[in-house]
Each structure stands twice: as C-alpha cells, then as structure tokens.
Image (cartoon, rainbow, N blue to C red; front, top):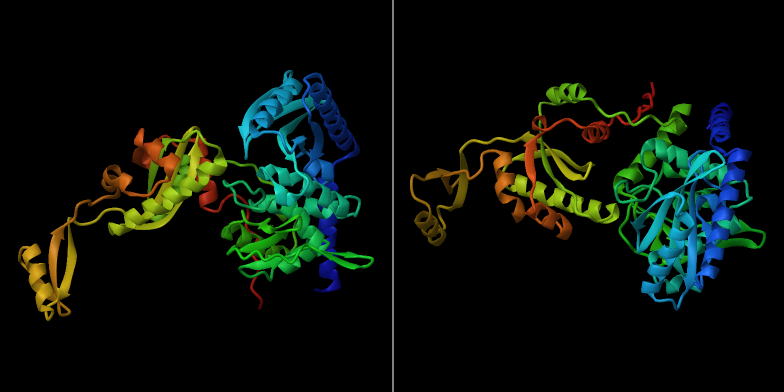
Length: 475
C-alpha cells in the first residue's frame, strides 16, 4: 500500500468517525437516562421486596454506539438461586413499573423481557429491560442472556478508554451499509460484541479489513491482547464447529461468537473489504433509504429475466423471529426439493414477511412441463428385472441405450398444481407446518397486490439495496 493510498484511507475514516461519534449532548442524555432508569429499577425493587440489582450493558455501557443509534440495554440481575418462574414474574413486574408512563411491549429471547421507548431530553430512545441470573462464572449459565454481563466486563476492561471505540463505530457502520450488521436470524450477520472483539484483535478498522480480505472458509480467531507483560490470550478453545467464521468467546471458550454469521455475510465482508481497500470511498459508509421496488420496476426486471415467480403465503406462526426464520428457511429448502423432484427447475428462492403473513418465494426457470415424461427401466439383458418391469408397465416399450423406456403420464404439469396438492409432503418444521395446515395460498406474483414489504424483499433479492462499487480490472 502506497503512502498516498494509506493517507486516503485514513482520511476517509477520520472524516466518517466525526459523523459517527456521539456528541456531548447525546452522550450526556444517554448517561443520564440510563442512570435514571437504573435508579428507578433499584428503588422499585426495594419497595416491592425483590432482591435484584440493575446494571447497564451493551454498546451504550461500552461507549461503542453510533450517533443516533443508542439502544440502551439494562439487565436486572437476580440471585442465581432464584427460580426461573420468579425471575420472569418479578423481573417483568419490576420492568413494567418503571415503564408505566412510556410505550412498551413484552418480547421474548431466552425468556421474556420488556422493550420500551423512553422520551428524554427531547429525544426518543429504545430501551430493553432484561431479567437475568447473576451467575458467578460464565460456565454456570442458567440462560443465554446470563453471559452478557461477562461480555460487558471483558470489553469495558480492555476497550473502553483505549481509543478503539471509534474503530468499532466504523466497523458497525461499514457492516450496516453492506446489509450484514446484526446477529438476528432474519439477517445472520455480525453482532456488536463480535465487532468489538474483532477490533480488539486487529486494533484498527483498516487492519481488520486487510486481514478480512484474505480470510478463507473456517477462519479461526482467538483474541490476543498485548499487555506490558506479553500478551493475554482468549482461551485456546477446542471448539470444532463447521462455521464460515470462528471467533472464540474469551469468556466462554466453548462458544463461537460468530456462529450466527452466514456464509453470505462472511463473503460479503470479504468482498466489501477488498473493494474498499482497492478504491476507498465515503460511499461505503452512507446508508441508503430502504425504498421498496415499485411494481413497474419489478415487472420490467422480471420480463428481462424471463422467469416466473411463485409465492407460498400463509399466516406466520406466533413465534419470535429467531425461531420463525430458521423454520421458514428449512421449509424453503424442503419445498424446493419437492419442486425439483418433479422435474421443474428453481433458479433462486427466498423467504420474507408481508405484514403478519410469511412468504416463501420461488423463481423458476421451468414452471410448466409436457403431459408425458420418460421413465427409464432396467437393461434389456437383465432378464429378471426386465420381466418385472414389463409386467408393471403396459406396452408400448422403447429401447434406448440398451434399456427399456416407457412414456408415462405426468401427474403435475405446472408448479402451482404441484404445490397446491403436495405441499404437506415436504418437511416444513413444527410451527410452519401447523400454520400451513390452517390455510395457505400458492400464487403467481402477478395475482397478488404488490405491497411495500414485497417491494423491499425484491429490492434486496435483485441486489439493488445499495450501490456496488466495483474494482476496476488492472490494465
């Protein structure tokens, strides 16, 4: 890398950091609101005779949030010996008392928590109030969220005040603009904690990209942090999962922090790193509005492709997204196999939500077939098998390449009929299967109103969600 090129990279990063770093007023508001909520939680706990203590965790506790994106996470710590039933009941009751003057809803992770929107100092903040067990060690977890306070302590001790917070912000914005920030099952990208660990490992955003540009499938990372006495290692884990990216959790060496990262997200980062390093641009840090594809734009693109889009649509099961999306993808793969077993050809497919409806989309190269198909039998020379075949299939027979062949009538000549009649033969997952039993539609896309949700899905499906900056070929 030339000096001029390096200066260009650093100049862009420096300019972007100035836009991502929260200002004094925003930082003060976040700090004051967090302290106020914690004080109220602790006071209400005392009033209600509940043994619990609230703490701040997540990006606002670690000063790694991007300006305008402050999601405040407050954990309500209960003694480890508390029963799960008491934790849920008392934790939610306590959280509701603090949120009674704000808009809030109950959500579910490993157990229920409260998501609220607080108005403070002229701003609106998303706040999660999460009950958890105050376990002594990460190896003694009673629920998945119990690990978060250990993550919090680990990052605060090593990153806060190190000057690396802005490098984390750069990485988060870069990933968000690539569409791969967030570990929820809908997205399957990089979590905030994973971003922090990667910056701790490589010490700068640019250094991370330089390494990521050379990653291979199964890339394994154990955080090493230089100290005055040498280095401190993340834990020489024996984790052996088959994941695109493996980043060992320094507080729980049996766990891969990057387990949620899909192959697509892994490769998208590699590609984005190479593009940015080759031709730096502020475009990589500009978030585009999520404008849905219009019906006329979709029709133009679909006409140019010459394919047909078929949708399976049904009322989504009443489960959280992190349970729903894996089941939808399982159903998608199983239905695709059903389609292809019947000689139709799927080009691509995907899953999405349209309001309260789950939608599985299939783009087909072949969606209609002739009424007959060729059924190939045994070699003519295999006497026993040949006689059995001829008893089973009435003449006329053909002989091709030394084997008997008969023409049989195809049961389904179009995909719509196949899916309307044979869908239950596919493996759909417990909740999806039950939802489909209650009713579903199989339609060509032109037979439904082209909604905003469908337009957003196809914007991403066709790769129109953000401009792709291509690296010019070398002369």
